[in-house]
Length: 224
Image (cartoon, rainbow, N blue to C red; front, side, top):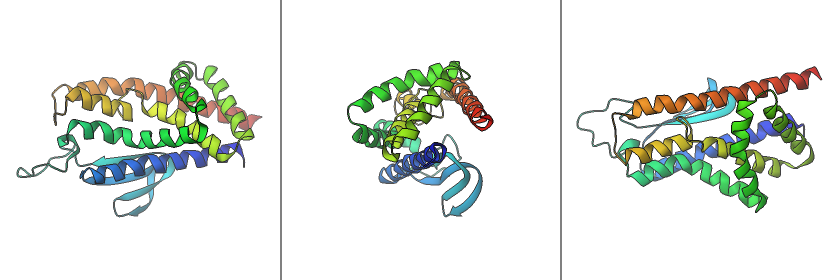
């Protein structure tokens, strides 16, 4: 299997497991799920609350949340995310990553912990040097994909993506859990909007740097 195709399949599988586990967890916690999106961009297919989009690179789940929508005055909000106990508000955004982390470590064994721990530094260092350090990391990843089977490639890639999602930035699972802890289980705090805005900026910077790195890597591969 071509490495690029293998990596794409790994990304799709990661996204499906990640979003699906969080949706199942939300339902188990009694939280209303407004919509589930697999992928980004224009919607190709909608089945009830589930939307399949053009680019299978990410996804999201929209929950009932009084910070995002206006509800009826007499609504007790028992099924709203931000009215849940603190442990649910922390566990839910970490549920998908936790399952994928356990699955990947089960495939790789003890060496998986080393790959997972190293991923945090690799993500930051690669973002700081997308045309050099990130290129070396992507070359190493491509070489690994050429010489190993799908299960191992999926496990390694999942560990890297789990590490990215656990970074303490708004919009990522780690940032969502961190903000929930900072709220102390309260449905709403006045400072959260400003904190979210500031925590969003470094996450976007890291994401954009890696998009540049992937784009440059793809361009070099096609030129070769």
